[in-house]
Amino acid sequence: MNENAGRDSQGTQNRPNVSTGILFLPSLIISSFNTSTLGLLASLFLIDMAATFNSSPGIVGQINTGTFIIGVLISLLMGDWSLRFKHKSLLVIGLLIYTVSAFGCALMSDFNFILILFSLSGAGLAMTVPMLETLVGEYITLEKRGHSIGLIVAGGSLVYFIGAPIMVILASYGDWRYVLPFFVIPISLISLILTIIGVPNESVKQKSPTDEISFYRSFKRILTDKSALSCLIGNALRSAQFAAILLYGTSFLRVLFKMSAEFGSIFILLTALGYTIGSIVSGSLVNRFGRKQITVVTALLAGIFTFLSAYSNNLWVFIVLEFLGSWFSGMVATSAASLTLEQIPLYRGSMMSLKSAAVNMGSAFGGALGGLAILSIGYGGSTSILGFMGILSAAVFYFYVFDPIKK
Image 1 (cartoon, helix red, strand yellow):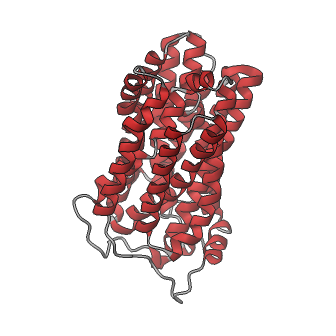
Image 2: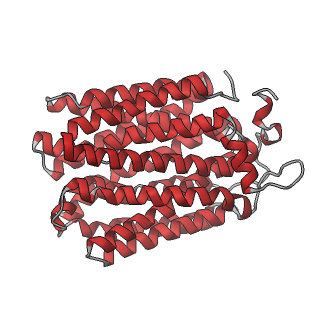
Image 3: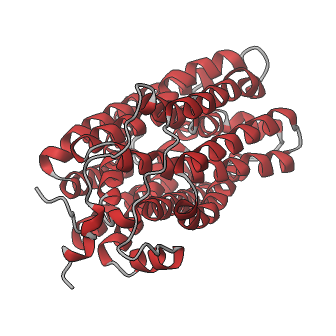
């Protein structure tokens, strides 16, 4: 069977068979916004959290690693659940778990409990993110999917642009804990309510010709497809690259240039702006130039600029390089999601769940490797290693991934 035939023609339905209301896409965007709030908290206040628990940033940063590890495990289960249950139900449960995690972190003061409860948010993320992308594939026509995914990815990064200054202001009244009850938890509740109202209740799952879809069948189908498997590997590598900016970029800035948390919030604003604009721009470009082409170029540039930022001793050069690295990271996040979404449409829910697992695995690897590198060779060495992961991801996408929607 040739590669084109392997795309599963019965999954190429380009028109949704269930109408959506005006709140559908906004609810997905706000849900994406919500899922980045705890990550921003850990990124912006990593040094302050370390001081609270009398530990080092490298150690406290492993709360992100715990989140990503749990995310990987749940994402693998989601490959089965996405075939058994309505995607809206899974999305709502994921948002609920994320909200419970935020409540728990607000109530606990012991680091061990914080580690457990913060890591629980990984389960919520693993259920939420793939369902946001899968719902786009089910309810939105092909020509509008790239733009819609771009808006959803931008929603996740927009919290860094809007939330960073709000978090700093809230923390100024006490410490980083004030952010949870007055920002993170309210946003979680709003996204949960809007999702319940805005996402249709109808199930639009696609069926195989024999109507016997199973997790094992979909899992085998995806992992034995060279292009689909390479998409997962490429997503893991580009996610590891972005950990240099997302998890450690602000701490690197504050340590290297002796900057305050307030200046760090401005830095986050700039990088978030780059990521947001990049993700939206990429959503428009994929239909014009092709998903694979945009993914390869932007993954390469994201890796190069991240790598170069590790060797800058000038504050403004460092900020420009990190901004560009974030811009192209946003672009590749959108284009890679669009490319992955179209790989095997028949098993779209399972494919995006495994993609979520790959992203979490890459983030966990990047977070762990970056933290260990900080302890042994410093922030510069950590950033350069993770930047190289982006370059590797571009090579994987270029040599091994097939774009079923050729331009």
